[in-house]
Length: 432
Ligand code: DLL
Image (cartoon, rainbow, N blue to C red; front, top):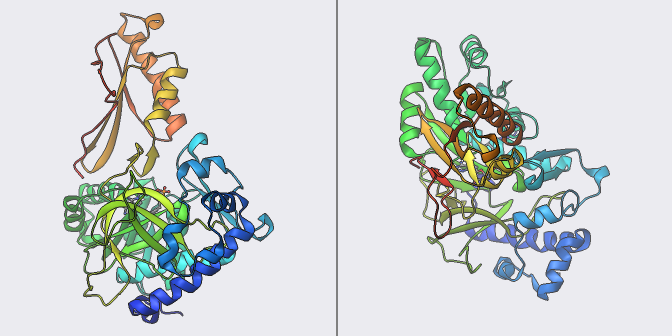
């Protein structure tokens, strides 16, 4: 069994890491130039050729890729390998217009699972652990990623997926789960359910690996206390393969980025200028080992800070702070990506005016979404039963678009404040 702490990689000197990055970057740029016409054209427009990229210092010469590029190139335009060499796709939780489809060769899956295995080991996982994976399985990367990592570490893996809390608790107690992997909000919900069912003494959990959405230190402490575990953060995005791009170690002061696979930059989101270490800005990733979906300089929209301060765990890879927000308008509600524009589309399709407000809150550590919309003039009614019926119809339409429940409140015409400048559509009351 491989040792996924991989000290020769994870504690390598800065010089060694840079040597790997330089070599892999040069190879990757050539691979993309040869196989991804979409990006080659972007390079040509910028007057850059592979010959211009001799080391990480030249990275800034390459053009950025954005979510808009992913949409333009959907579904096959950014592939670096023929479909016959790909073995898997994963996708984001967004809907048609925004959906990101990422492709993987077997080699890509292996490297991705290595990254997840490192995260599990950093959380104290060994082959003697029982790893309870309650991230969603399917197109979402959470379940498959941690599942693969858990196999590599040699843990007994429980592919629970999310939901069916009663069954989660039964397996957790009967099989003695020791590591829980899920979104922090689901962990909080599970913690509450365990408490209510009086099962605290029957669980054997020691660690949790929680990510896919923003969560505060307060939430971490609360989960740690309720479950009697140490809670570790894990970060990633579908575009870069999924969870495991970075993960927390025992120091819990940021997440080590797997620099043998990803080069991280922080840029000014407005100008695109690369910022020095310690600056707050938008995180940009270049994947230097992925074959099928080799994104160069991908703008994540996540705002954070990088640090190279030595870490007590001995790992030398750069650390990123928890994302402090996003530079675009995407909301992450219960781990699901929600764009206000999707809500607007549903409202308008159902014949409602564009006078609405989206209220996001966090109640008992779980995200809530409420949509307030003004009554449509042609649907005007004084009957409470009829309004309730209209609200129910909207709840269903929103569920179909977003995949999650949104409470709907139809309010009287003209009761939502009009704005003179940009409309304030979203009120996010969560304290992150
Ligand atoms: O959320 C991958 C993942 C699965 C990460 C399981 C960790 C655990 P996407 O659905 O593509 O992928 O969403 C990616 O989620 O750009 C961040 O804004 C946000 N995000 C992911 N991890 C964290 C985290 C998965 N630890 C988007 N803290 C990213 C805050 C996170 N935000």
